[in-house]
Image 1: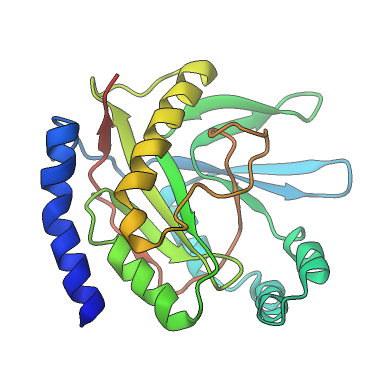
Image 2: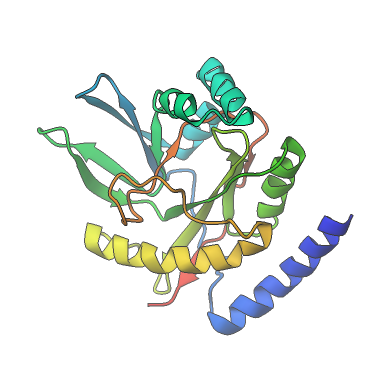
Length: 238
């Protein structure tokens, strides 16, 4: 009850605070569809990567399936017992999800940017128990900008996918412009979702150090994830 009261008050204040600071931040007339595409990377061996681009509805189905159930069960047990070295070796066997864009592999096997999808990922980790994980997921969905909230691979974190667009309504098309946009978008999104936990941030993993566009998280499973297809994007001032 105490948490619910805090959350209700926060949601009431959310629009007042951010509407004053960022005029026109929310626009109910601009809705994404389930056509966003995410990139999934898997190591075929020590030198080769396998890349898949999947539509959002397919990603949602994959997150509900238990394909990596045993790996995740092993990882979550290691997290519980704080065995960091073994935990890393297990985690590295899980695919990486790049939530913000479609990528391709060039002839040399390097990642090449193709298209920004308007998504960014937040995470909050080191949560004490499953009850708190579920509370964070439900609470994140109270904000209309949340597309999805689900349990992270460790079992003690929550990943939150948030939509964002420039104030003029058109997504950037070059890698440089997209990175500049995401630098701004993450600052605003972290501030907006900080009520969930002081530890709310972008995922720690980035396939290019310091780049928001290359932020990634490990494949996970959550058959109780929350998904809102008609989430409203945050509008980022130019």
